[in-house]
Amino acid sequence: PTGSAGPGYCGFWTWQGIDDTARTIIPNGTGDVTKRLYFRFVYSSSGGSTGVFFNDLVPGNSDSYSIDGSTFVVNCALDGSVTMYRSSGERTLDVSMWLLWI
Image (cartoon, rainbow, N blue to C red; front, side, top):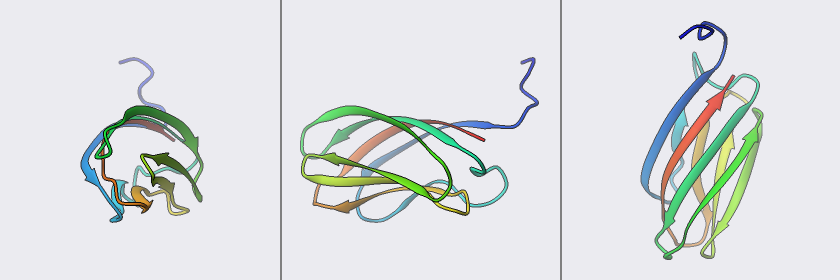
């Protein structure tokens, strides 16, 4: 489409059973986050709840979400890579995530 030659990227990512192992959403390298990331995700927890979260991050920042007694983190590392993992608790999470970044 017209106007799509500018900087920036978009993506869709899903994972089933997010636990304490960091899952790579955007790898470090060409096309990673250099300025800002916006994301929105829907989830289903092994604890039975479902919901939606959204936020924006710059490289070097993260955000955490308390879901059914467990804490899940979306991390945008200084190198521009993005991961998601559980930092505490026992629940797992099924996630579908939409992302925009530049």
